[in-house]
Image (cartoon, rainbow, N blue to C red; front, top):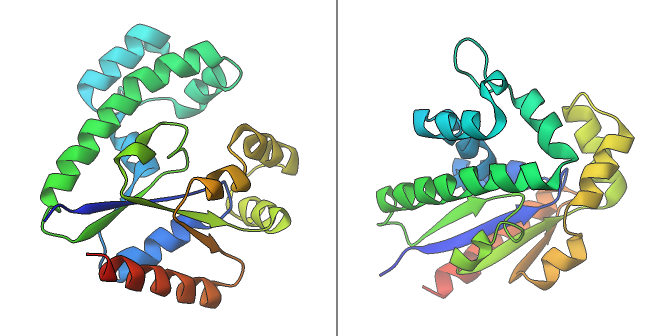
Length: 197
């Protein structure tokens, strides 16, 4: 029996990471793409490729990536972002495949990714759960979590797919306003996934 991959996605401030942590606490394997991508970007062969593409100054003396500088370079430069994604996405995909092998006895695993649809990795998923929340709540969550401004958050939200676009392409949608209610929704989805095994 092949392990099923359940995608978990949502816009900034939707609460998908909180949901991922809840699933981890319940004993489900969850691959958190952002965290894993950060690890992958420190792999020596990836360091070499990024340095070749963006110049060695993108790294500090300890050969650690200066993420702020890299973000500044790619933020308003679609061409540079494309180059970075061409290096990082295949490496993260390979890393995920290796992770999957270590969890192949599980009936299903979760892959949490903000850009599940944009990166094309939804194609590897057997089902997708989109987490949504009202705009003002999302902004409030991010303001509490990050040192940022309302304008910057709105800019990021506008650069991502809309909740409607994500929901239309997903098998399950969770409205995450009240976490007790969210837990009830995730339990229903888990029940449904187990029934389909």
